[in-house]
Length: 486
Image (cartoon, rainbow, N blue to C red; front, side):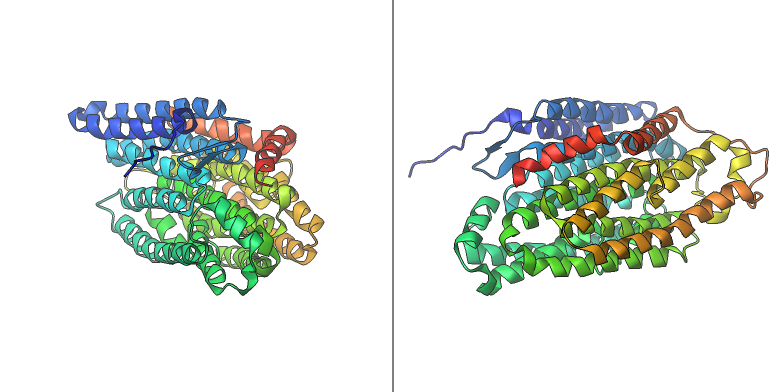
């Protein structure tokens, strides 16, 4: 029997190699580091992300497949990897001071972040359902551990256990969907799936329909869409705050990276059959997320439901489809990464050892105690609500505009109404910061912000305002990134 060794272009997977090798290096070296030198693991991790980011830049405008067409490098995957790496870089920075404060500074934390980032990158480049599943599991298993990283905190333990159980359940749906599609097509390669659907009557093939439905359930869990969102509030509230910010940004974008590629590429010829299902999911996700957020008294829980609502806005772009819809979704996910991580950075800055101070009343009088933090938080909240001239406004404008062009005006009306609802709970925090006296703190209490957190706030604020005032450059990159899949 002759063995066929597939040709592998290492240049195409260089960003993944860098992230993986540094993650392993941190695991190997951390046991030999003293307590005072544990911070070296953090520095190694952000250096790895920077090197991978540079390697990823060199792949722009390159479209090539490797590993027998299972791994695809194109502008679509490259753009998403920029989102993942940028988000991971910011999370690593804000984690340093947080882990020191909570006295849980361990190297495996940063190694798990890198492994999770590796899984996201595989999701973006996966051109085979097996590779997509592999990336999803690498990302998810790392996140299960990170959610429970505060081992002495029962809420963190509960978040990890709930995330694991619900995630394993959703993974079963995804895997069974892959099996059904393989049983019908005889392949898990996305290119062969689209060829099979195009040349055969997919509408009468129940296995393809069932497989697509189960895939939608699995991806729906990862992006936290209704009715697969029940894990989000408890996990976001119980997990360490930097990990909450991480889960709300990178993994959500990774879920959409796989969802958009699979459904808008492999199932594009039966789009009219599944569009109505996603239409209903988008409307419910926006509505449930915003309405339930109104009743929250904990800011992490409120931002959890806000995250659900924003997943609904991106689903609007999936319903719209086409180059305009997908490019607006990419722009939205990039903007959401910066404004959400920025908001969580302010939440971390207000915390103390053993006290996250995430109750809404903890923000009372923040404008007098720390005007700069209050102003920055206002910018992030305004962006999440969709006020101009922030990135959130332009992101919603492009998403809703793409849906109107595709004829989904009714869904856009629902989205606009939900945006108006969200204004209430975002502005409620602004009112507390500037128009209420402190409740749980004294006026003269000084809020210390670590240098790395200041750096994250500067980067996030600049990105939110840059994308809001001058969005065309990044939107052009998003548009260039989707031309390869249409």
